[in-house]
Length: 360
Image 1 (cartoon, rainbow, N blue to C red):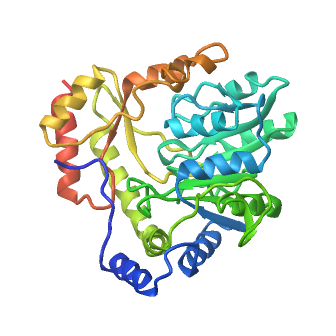
Image 2: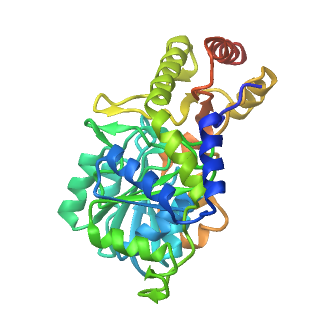
């Protein structure tokens, strides 16, 4: 089976973890600091705060910018649950705006139409690694005095107008889950150029402490381990080469599939550099049957995501109004194919041939 994703871990990661274990310092030490510094330089921001997961990053970021009970946060219905969970953790209300059918990201026009006097922020997800239309979203925020928050869980390495995703909003959040473009096993990161936000996030992740046993606010244990950070620093050094390979793999898939009837290959905005976390096609036939046929051909195709978030049982009680028909249609048509850097040319040919065979 050709897997949908596969973390690349080698001797350097093993050596880095071994060094941490031998040091005896497993939490909040020099490896975390080094990883934060490396990402700060890579992204071009003033502050980075490593945490235990991408979800933790979202939760702390929303608290740090002052999202509170009764606030409304506009976000996408086509995303992983962590995005909405973070909003609800603040007792705020998620408001779902529809998506652009080409990029699968928030449609700025639909976002602006969703604004009320309770709207406090836009939480934009760079889905599958394709950057959102950040200028349009920022202009909306400026007009309506809102905060722009970026969910970059899938977009590390992606750029919008030659700037890294995660540098336009007031705060941004990254994930290093094993399927992501780099991994720390579990882990996340908050990035911001606002010192006050960074200070709040640093204290929140460590039980509200600025120094041992001096607690300035209610906090959490959302620290990143030294082991995770050591892995992440090695991974980050390899990211540029992996991004090139992801792009090359995506181009080979597009070349092989773009003429096939019944398939819409991924769109890439000329203003953006896609991070290719996922290579997501749209199919006009029965998507679920195609997925099963591909598994029979040895290709692990996946559906991200099979239902809009407001259709999830847990969220229905918080649905404000309306629907997002473009996102709903996407949930029935999207199918992600393997694009990760460990694929060889033969693997990609196998994927292309399998897709062509199962779509009749």
